[in-house]
Image (cartoon, rainbow, N blue to C red; front, side, top):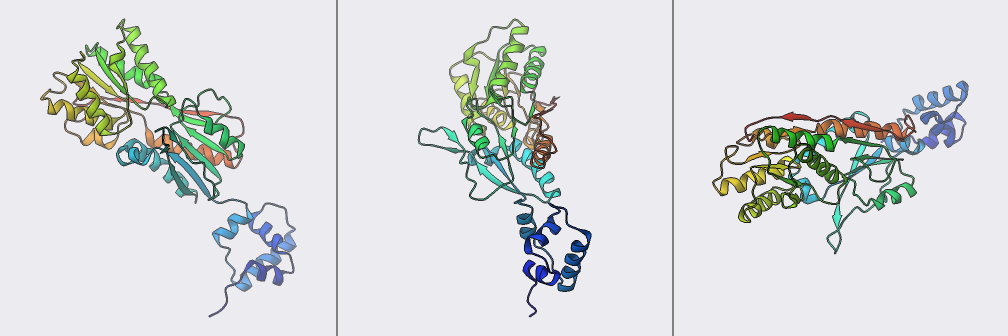
Length: 335
């Protein structure tokens, strides 16, 4: 079998150094037309085809980005994450980038964290669900890794991010329920340490205040994005006889859990208690009854975040900026 040509063979035949061949391949440095021609002639004569790895090393790129996402427990059920992931993968695949997924973990104190493990080098990072106390942002800045948040930063103005207007989206959802006559709305928010959860609560409180409705803290809960959490919180509220006529949840899978609890207690929806989710994921469309929700355009969040990250990596974007993706009400059978 004929031996496969190497970059060293090309350099020897062209009468140049290996680094010169690398510069011709990467275009990182200007090389004279005469030398460039000799290198290409040698490549053709030797039938040399540079590997993706060799090209990436020459360009000092891994063509890989890291995605710091939710915990594996959430990923199992969170179709909103799957939509974001679809947007990211569509963009990265189109641009010949690979994706490494780093799920959120929990320590012995049950606090969430990410291992900023870069034993596998990456060109940049996408970070989902930023915390209110996001110390890891300072760590990743020190590593000088380009990154984009999917979600708003807290207390940082020097960060690229893509997000929804979570305050406006939750205000819109709460207002929608109030216009239907509901004044006692149970709000099941996301995890308390997420920036987005704080923003959603602001939107909920804003709508209550505008309608002159007193805010009962017994009507506000924080939960992981699982069906079981929605089920347990709703069941607990019913058993403790908290007065409410509607439930708003921070994502659709929580709403599925709420509906399960209501069905178990033989409470009709929406006749007795209305239910509304957020996300407009597939489950909200195929569930019976279909779930009223807010379309947060998760696919666009992922696609735009990946696009922005590549712009940051290639220095097409240097001044910090943000992209805000709109949200849309989607009325269905549960309201």
